[in-house]
Length: 258
Length: 270
Image (cartoon, rainbow over all chains, first blue to last red; front, top):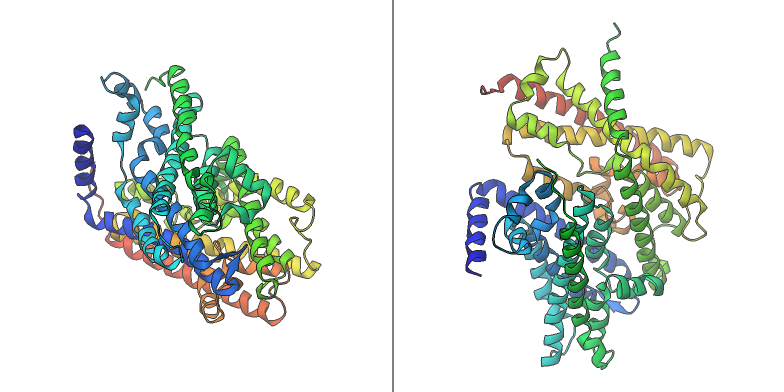
C-alpha cells in the first residue's frame, strides 16, 4: 500500500508538470461526459419517461455507471494500455521484479485527466441521489455502494480480460472494447429498455445489469427481493474469471523480445 | 507533369496503406454492428414511450443510424493522425517542408485517403447486412434517384468539410504545441453538435436552429437526413448552400493559418 501511494504521488506529480495541458485534457474529459449527459437530458426533455423510468431515475443509473467507469479508466489505465507495455518489452522488466505483476501493471500508469469524467458524473450523482425519489434507508445506501463497487469490478475486470488477451494477440483485442465502451455508453439506461434478449446478455455474459437495472428496482422500491439488493455482489464475482484468464495468459506469455 | 499528379499519388499510397489493416477493420465491423443495434433498440424504447413526440419517421432514424455506422470512419471528429501531431511538435515537419508540395494540400490529401480507405473496408458489409435486416431494424432504400444523387454529392462534400476541420486543429497545434487538450475539447464538442450522439432533430427546436447553422451540422447530419427524405425541398437547397459555404471558408481559413504558422515556424536543430 505504501508503495502504491508512492507511485500515486509520482504519477500525480508527473501529470502536474504540464498543468495547462493537464487541465485542458481534464476539461475535455469533462465535456465528453457532459455531452453524454446532455443527450439524456434532451431525450427526456422530449419523451419524459422510458419503460417506466423517469429522467431522475435514469440519471442515477447513468451517473453511477459513469463514476465506476471513470474510476476504473483512471486507475486501471495500465491494463488499458497493456499492449504498449508488451510491445516495447517493458513487461519483461516487470516480471523480473519481486512484486506481483498485477500490482505493477496497476502502478505503471494512472491517468488523472480521466477524473474529469468522474467529476461530471459526481455532480450528476449528487443531483440524482436526492432527486430520484428514493427513500434512503440503510440497506438501500448499502446497495448503492454495492452498485458503485460492482461497477468498478466489472470495468476493471473487462480491462483485465483485455490485457489477458494481449498475451496471445500482442495487439489489443479491439472486440473487447465493445463491452468496455458499450457498457459505459448503453449502461446509462437500465438494461431492460433494450429488450429481453439484451437484458439476458447483460445479466449472464457481462453482468452490467447487476449494477444498474436489478439493484435500481430495489432502490426505487419496486421490489423488496433480497436478490435484487445483493445483485451487485454478483458483479464482484466477475473479477474471478477475469483474474483467472489473466493468469492463464501470463503462463503463456512469450516476450516480443524488443 | 500534371499539377495534381503528386497529390493523386499520395492519395493512392495512403489509401492502399490503410487497406492493410484488415483485421482491425473486422474488429471495427463487429463494434459497428453492436453499436447500431443497441442504438436502434434504445430509440425503439423511446418510440414506444411516446411515438407522437418522435421527431423523425422511425425508418428514417434507422437508416440514419446504419449510415452513421457504415461511414463512421469517414466523418468521425476524433480521428486525428498522431504522426502529424508528432511532426508538428517534434520538428519533423521540417522534412515535410522540403518536399515540393504545399503542406496543407499534402496533409489534406492524406487525411482524405485515410478516412476513405477505412470506410471502404467497413461500409459495404454494414450496409449489406443493414439492408437485409427485417423491419424495423433494416435500412430502407433512398426515396428517389435524384435524392440519392444529392446524397452522394453531399457525402463527398461532407468529407472535405470534415477533413478541413481536422486541418484547423493541426494548424492551431503549430501555436499551442500541445495537441491533446485542444483535440479532446474539439472532438467532444463536434461530436455533440454534428448529431453523432443524438440526431439533431431530437434536440429542442431553438437549439436545433442554432446548431444547423454551424459547420458541424453540414457533415453527417445533412447527407444522412437527405437520404431518408427527412430533409427535403427547399431545406436541401439551404443545407447544400451552407455546406458549400462552410467547406470553402474553413479550407481557406485553414490555409491561411498554415501559411502564417509556417512563416514564423522555428525548427530547432536536432
